[in-house]
Image 1 (cartoon, rainbow, N blue to C red):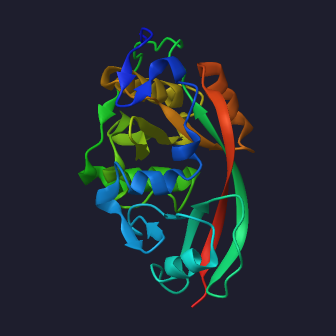
Image 2 (cartoon, rainbow, N blue to C red):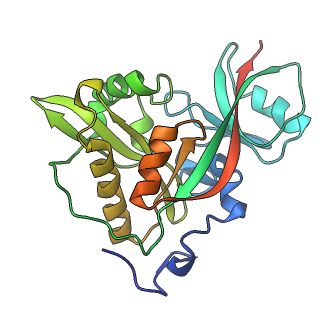
Image 3 (cartoon, rainbow, N blue to C red):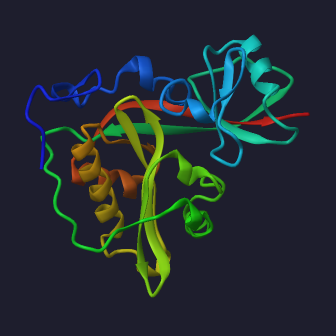
Length: 246
C-alpha cells in the first residue's frame, strides 16, 4: 500500500518523503511543542518542556546561556531531562551529564506496507500502567504515566498480558514519530516489533502523514531491522542528558 506522486499531507509533498525538513527536525521537541503538541507545552521565554509525567524532553529556541537559565526555571531540583542540540554553553544551574547520538530515519513512499499477520489492539490511556511496566524493561524512565497521551498506542497481548507495544511520540505537522516499540523478553524473535511498526505505518499512510523515528546510533539490532523494513537515515542529532543542580 503506497502513495502516488503528488499526494500531500498538509504542506508536505510525498515526492520528498525522504526529506525531514531541517527547519523542523534539527530541533524536533521545540517544533512539536509549538505545533501539534502545544497542549503539553510548558514555557518560559526561549525554553519549553513537556510535563514530567508525559516525557523527559525539553527544548530551547537557541543554544544560549539565557535560554538555558530560563529552562532551569522549568525544572525541579535534581530533575534530569533530555535536550536535542549539537552543543550548549555551560551554566551553573544545569549539569550536562552525558551525550547520546541518535539517527532520524523515515519510511519512503515507495516502500510497500504489508498487511497485519497478528492481532494488534488499541491501547487506551487507562492501560498506561501496563505500558509503563513493559517499556521499563527495555528503556526505563522514558515512557511515563501520560506518555500514551502523545499519540495512538497499540499492543499485542497473550493470555491477557501485554507482551509487545508501540505508538506515536513527538508529533510535528504531518510527521508522527514511531516510538515506544518494545517486546517482552519472553516473546522476542517472533516479529512482533516489526508487525507493530507496520501497523503504525499503515495507519499513517491512511491518514496521509509520514512515518519517522529516532534510534540510538549504537543500537545496531534496531537499525538493522528498520533498514530491512525500508527506513532510511536522514540525519544524526545529539541528545544531552542534563540535571537541574539546585
